[in-house]
Length: 507
Image 1: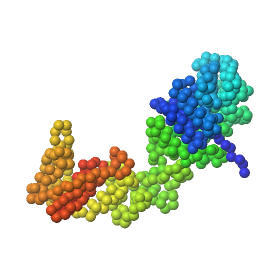
Image 2: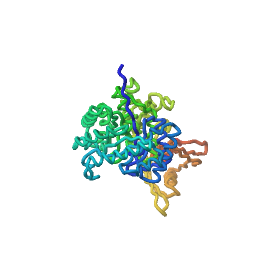
Image 3: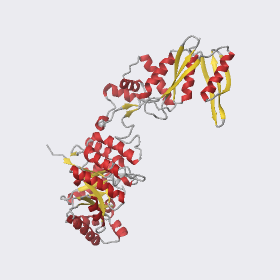
Image 4: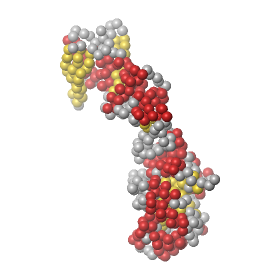
């Protein structure tokens, strides 16, 4: 059997990912992420910083290299450096890092207009930095900045550069699509050309995502023979970001069985959420593999198919990434969605009750309410209790007002049997004003309302501001004490619903 080709994974979240606008990791956050990436996610290498950026950056790298040295992982920690004589090397020495990724020019355009140097002059400067690093025991990889445009517009320069660099004591050549301009076809063609021409060199491919082609370009670069790839957690990076780690790993595992890698899939979601917290950048709900909604079935027909024979499953099973499949509750929910969620809660309903609960969830979805699994017991309680109560009394309309320095007021219209009544009142709060108006209506009917003795509000676990709210009111009449419940996303409305249920229990 043919041996599968091993692909090195270099994570650059802490260096290139930190170039995301508004993102800056603290020293302790960088240390925690470097530890997690190397020991739990098990990437092969981490690029943790750029040399000479700040005192804080130096402190962060010192902390990481101290830990890595003790853990026997120092050769997996890399730092971006520059062709600047001795300056970056002095910084490297102070930081304790032993692997540098030297930023050099990979296109004639950059070389001519940014450095204003000839190729021979640039190569001489690079050679000197590499020689000095070698004397300090620092291993060198070289970035060819703007390499993709170099291959497009000045390929003779790129080949001249590589003819030079293969004579130097370097470990890897890093090929960045710096501006994210490559197509998948170009990624394959350019990488294949270099791998074929320079079989002794190790090539890494570094994709940016400006055209949303980062994952596809990585796939083609590996198919062309690239030996390693650079990724970031959540696709962090400058502009549109870098190739996202979770998506790339899933694609390679499922579509390229000829390669193997050391990354632990089950750790990808964990590190994604931690980076989300540290970076302050929220993961889109629909982001592949790590988004909140990507393992959520919404349509009832999909939930029904899953129940019968996993008809709507694909190879991206949530368990691979330490996650679970869920079934959304809303206007597109069918009975199968409800049943799947009830099963998770250990609840069984009769066919008739299940229909009633399903209809109520659909109604809430039409109102754009977010219904969660944790809401279901409240919905069940509300629906099943309501269905057992006749509707002699109905609160037809109401207007509740609350203004600064004015007492809250309520205007309502109520139907009692075949009669309709309208009343306005003020109170100490909106619900108090509602009850005062209701008492006035009932006094016209020579009827006395029971006394409100307790008023409790609760929401399902999770603490969301859009959560359904259940109001439980205890009433005391001359003969007995009883409770009614109301359910809505608005607390006052849920109390009104509980009150209407009380009105329909009166003789």
